[in-house]
Length: 64
Image 1 (cartoon, rainbow, N blue to C red):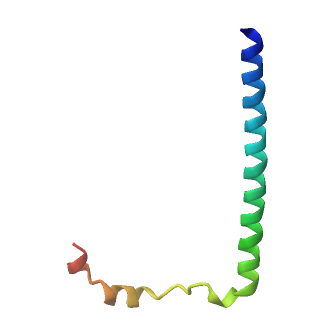
Image 2 (tube, rainbow, N blue to C red):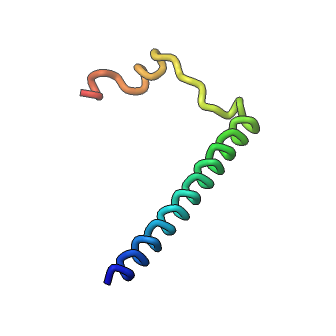
């Protein structure tokens, strides 16, 4: 019985380790893609709009 428990624990440990490696690889890939996106289109980032323009789009009476 204890051998079965240790095999199960070992399999679980190996699975968690593999999943941790995959998560690290995916995080690395995401950061690489974000960096490449910023390099390609620095002007494509949305520019903040002036407050007055936002106030005209949604007056306080409508928001309430």
